[in-house]
Length: 81
Image (cartoon, rainbow, N blue to C red):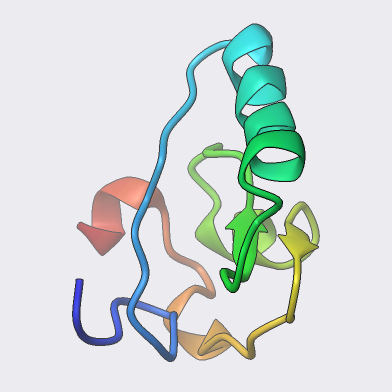
């Protein structure tokens, strides 16, 4: 993606994992294989509460980017799409 998307102020891409094992493997890959490089990574669960997913439950690797939290408040994943 070449432009900002949703609450994100800059271009981003999404990776979905579906099991704890996949999530652990992805974290390991980010940390040990590619050393995250110049990328800043926001990791969050998908729980149908976009605000909590991107704020309270989020983990950042690298620089923490400001998000447009107003776009997330009182929104579910289904209502956002």
